[in-house]
Image (tube, rainbow, N blue to C red; front, side, top):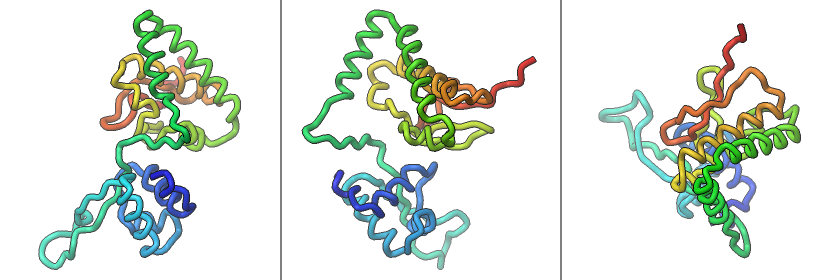
Length: 209
C-alpha cells in the first residue's frame, strides 16, 4: 500500500483527493493536479485497487434520464490511517495507554494545559506560514466555513474510541495553543463537531467591547 504512494504524481493525486471536501471525478483530479485525464484515471484506479480510495458511481448534478450516459466514477479517501514504518511502531497503542491513564487519574486539565503548550511551541516554529498550510502539515484537512475553518478529519481519530470527550478537549487545547503561537488573534478554537469530521472548529472571535 505504501509503495503505491512512492510515485510522485500518484502521491499528488492522492493528496488532491484527500484534501477535497467531497468526492472527486477524474476530471476534477486532472484539473487540480495539472495532468491529463488518462493519467489521472490510471493513478486513481491504482489507488482504488490498493484500498486507499473508495469509488462510487453517480451522474453529475443536473444530468439524468435517457441519453445522460453512464454514471461517472467518484473517488474519495477511505476513512483509514496510513502509517509507514519499518519495523512497525505502535505509537497509537502507547497513546491510548497514556490517554487511559490520564482519564483514570482525572488529569484532563493537566493534559489540556500540556496540549496548549505544545500548540504554542509548534505555532512558534511555523510563524509566518499560511494557516491552511500549518493545519495541513499537522494532519488536519481544513475546510473554509462561516469565516473560519472546519476540519474534514480528526488527526486523533484512532484514540477517539478510548475517550472521545478527553480527546476533543485535548484537540481544542492544542489548536488554541497553535493559534497563540502563530499570533492569530481573530480566530477561536471551539468544540463544534462536523459530522464525519473533527470535533474542533475555528470561528471568528467576537469583537471585544
